[in-house]
Image (cartoon, rainbow, N blue to C red; front, top):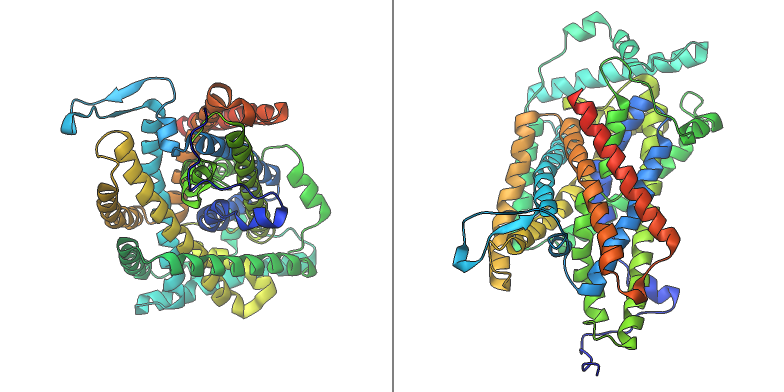
Length: 516
């Protein structure tokens, strides 16, 4: 006999307007994705490999959604977070002798791997706070050496752009290769290069302190909404920039460029850099990365999809509710995918058409200044300020929303491995602790390494290595724990297998390439 209905249970929406009013978790992730994956990693890939890896960028955005929805299906069915579900995957478990209040502390192999990836993601956020510090140091330098360094970078990049435009007008090859770009810098300019100032690090510390206060006191509702509005505005500016770029002959994207990018081919290794390694690291964080796949069910629980479905009482009513709310979740995931895929492709094409043609790869202390070059052909002298405003918006939204999610995940994993009780009072205390500790670790990583692109790529590689494990978990959920009434089509099963194989091949290649 079915149990009495829960007063929190709700019937799922049936019409498209009502369905769209209930979406949201995917767009929270989208607001956090633009900073690290799209703005930094995707443009770096386009700058290194040109148009040749456009197909991989699109594939990386789309194929992950099948895994994302499958994990969401598990959440709706069993009303549990991703870490709790992952800890139930069969396989080796690691336990330690410590037993707080008689509980056995430990976790299975996939949660342990997630913990390793989680630590690498702190490096990724270190790269993001470094990018924020660079954008503010360029807008408001704090020292005289900072102002001198900005002027030097402006001169160097302006010279490179002028030579590229002159080469196009004269019909000679543009300085696209990195070694050619170095030749565009005159010896006198190189000799007068000032030392890298510490303004960006000072700004990074100040922004981190403000973020800690906001996370600690929980005053982040307005900041999150405000940041998402800024991200949306900057995305529209980027799309406008890409369209207007077609009116500039030196930078326009021709149809053969796009066809070349959609052809399944790999770029050759060029000198000391390997654009394929950059691309595969980018694959790990564009769209929904491994950390986002684990975080997505949490936001679905916060939204209420599982609560509105109710506990499984083996009734037909429950099956109908589960099918309806799963449909809402699918609309949420695919709508967000459409948004960030379109944005990712726009950033990639800008990186390939502008940075790739002048041979500028965003890296080191001049990463933000190099990225601003993508907007100069269209917006001219105002491009730098416009880009700095947008870069701060998207990077800070990623840093803030990402750390807010990390505080929850770090608190949840303590309960999953039995270090703490999952009570609300302990959760609140640990979330405040992580609100202080995690941002400090991020800014410390930037202070130690100093290269935002390198930190982001390290985090991307770690996420790419975890992707096959998360896809394996999705396959386990589908074929071992999926409710008969919620089983997907054979095409869906095929795409899950394709995702698992693609993630595994990429992970193996990254390990092989790093050791060779």
